[in-house]
Length: 432
Ligand code: HSE
Image (cartoon, rainbow, N blue to C red; front, side):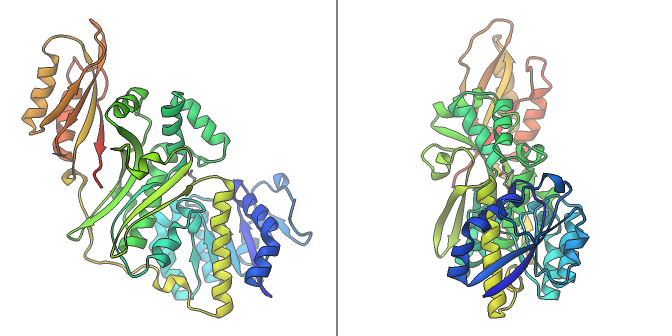
């Protein structure tokens, strides 16, 4: 029997899920893969809170991760604490100490992926990270292995379960943003700092991981345009629906002529597009590939057992490679493309939905449309449903395709008008 000693660092929602999964599936894993995982040590800041169900009596508990990463008997370190520090030191030292690493840490991979992979390659130690994007949906393996040999033209993803859950709840149950967020936190979907989810940053971290896998570029996360969902109101959702459109927080990376667009923002997509029917905590990733064509991956993108499933599949894959004495997967995981550059956000072109809260007086629309016209933005339609003397009402506009820069400059001007009562909301439409 192939035996791997595991050191688990972080025993929160996902860490305890990993133990639960391993306990439940132990016999199956032993029978099918001839492999046993022994959890030798568990490290968590709060060892008193650790529920020992399913753990062997010989499992050691510690509050000091050094006891795990310096233990010569541990083959694989599973890092599930998230964040940059001390996760970077944990992963680097584990690799230097000859251990493989399994992680769900998209933030660290987005910031330090290149350094970690260089270290892994030099040491011939692997880094597996299936649960970093889409939890247990096999996204990483699909790009790295299932679609090996393909060219990637674009990736379009709903890759934050919390945001998708919030937008879906606001649509379906007409509940408030805050209520839906609390529900997502209670269900264990949100990050310990939920700002990462709703600001779009978590999606941006995951997009950075997808970009190095699919396009061979380690982006600087600051260069990924990132906008969250907290300014989206029920009025936007309702208006979108009346146009047969749906608002989704999309992470988009697409390539043409050695230029890569990399952006995360609320996006209007046609209601009949497959991504529009992805609701709740579900995630989906549409991969535009050549020559295989479009591939759609779908599943529960956050939550304890889905994320634990991603970690377990990594452990099994590692164990099988280890047993066969194969080269580390990391050796051929990323082939950097030195000529690929990021396209500036200002140069991106899209149709826009714009909502203004404007005073309801004659002549207001001509002022607003005059500013848009001066910036070369052509209006496709205007709607004002409510009529209220002396107070602000929502005005919805759709534009023909326009350059991002022109929209930004026009909206800055419009938001300074006394007749406009809050910052205009602009949502890009995506054509696939
Ligand atoms: N907070 C993340 C989400 C968890 O909501 O998608 C999975 O990475």
